[in-house]
Image (cartoon, rainbow, N blue to C red; front, side, top):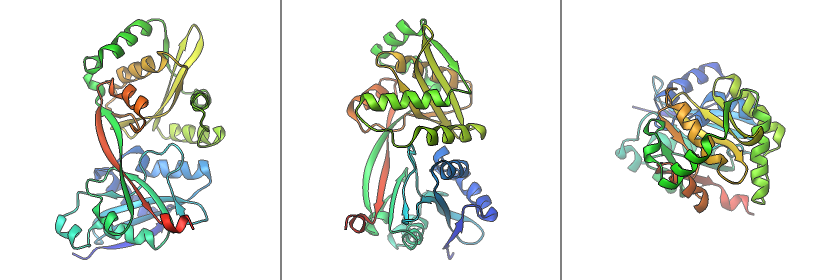
Length: 307
């Protein structure tokens, strides 16, 4: 079987149909690697988009959606957890060792188009990237099943939730995007960090994905005062703790707990906490009974970029 790579504009309808079929069967499937996310992120941040597909003609084995500026830099948009290649199935090791795997051909095609790339991806075997002199480093997140309930939580998290749940008002609020983005920004300020994108752009991204049925918005109030908000991104199977913020104290524990409770009857089988790479934040997420999961950061063109 001879497989080859082709590059398309993201609005190519035939390529979009092929991507949709590949994406639905891919182990790297997530809301972040969907066509809808690429469409909305490109519009919200003023980026250009392309689509690379690798296949034999009858079946696509791999591919990648890229978002870029005029500087030929393909990087994740702000608040994007996963960004990069997807595979139809894990690659045959004979093809990997022979430097003919679908992932290798995908990376080679992308190298011809970009001078710098940064990907975050749940690949099982990133060696083709290493062998092509990409910088490969592990990253981590916590994932749990909403069906497991509070029994898996730590004792301290259960106590906090039980104590404050009854005095907080939890609401699914379709019009809360601006408030949630503002909560997130205030959390960044408290940690002496700058929000990675302008508020208006983030609100536009949240609301456009909400229109496509990929975002649910939750808020938590106490005595009428907004104490926390969460924009939950999902693809119908996995949900992501995406854009969130809260006041210091128990608000986020209650907000996450009530969100998980809401998801139990929604068909969502997994909840991804979107990162476990900062010790204190990772510990907060672990206490909900989540399991550590690894993904990879792939970077190409580092030496070129730093000249």
